[in-house]
Length: 314
Picture 1 (spheres, rainbow, N blue to C red):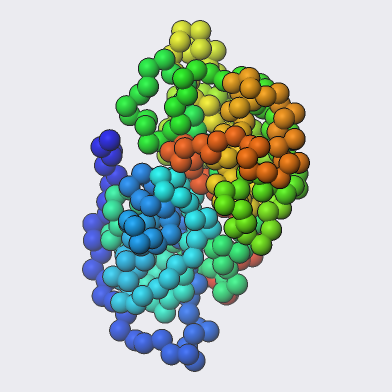
Picture 2: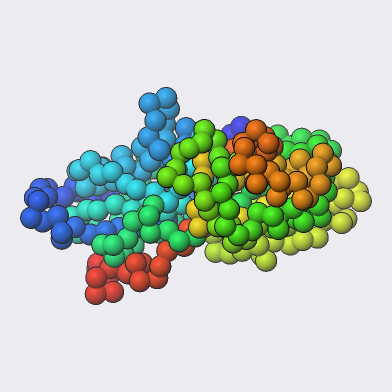
């Protein structure tokens, strides 16, 4: 499937920094945060892998071109192959004196068109893209339609018919709160603990949908009027939003696959609670395809979002 072109900024003439960083200067390094959007179709995921191109690989190469240094960047969530993002967060340290606004444009000039730097800013030395995150929001997008659209294949999970959304929403109540979610974790154990707290889990429906809306990604922003489309047999979009203090490997996709079991009538809503109590991945549903998943937003403590002194490098 061909990609729609994304405007690529003109290259910026910025020579690599020539000074070397010594151990004594390490404490003086700037801490920079990047907010990134990308279409994950062409990549083996965020993390550098030996079997294909990754988003991290491209971003690090763009930073290397500017600074002349090999810099390893950290991220909020290591998205899998084919997973998209409109709010990924990454961070790195540098002795570069390029102001954040120009740094954003400079990094963008070295990236392919399906990776976009939305923001670059100086942050606190205590900021860590992975461990400082307090909440993450993911969105999973499904489309039910009489005829499969060739234009949405890598952007949504296609369904043959509209599931029972009311039953799926009722099932969401069993997800809320603090639980051991190993039943939704692939290749357990991947983390020190499988206990997570889910703060929100809800479905919305809309007749039209577009993934690129970085200014307002709240559930309330979605128009929930699909009755006409359902009556006339046209396509409709089913959107699942979930927010938690953290997620396990393949957790969101496993939750979606399990909720769809309820949506097609194989299990009642309360079955979700039984699956969680079982702590057994085999009791849950399938892992839904990567194409429908988006990392939407990552939240950090406000005090970590400012550099020492509170002023961005000019």
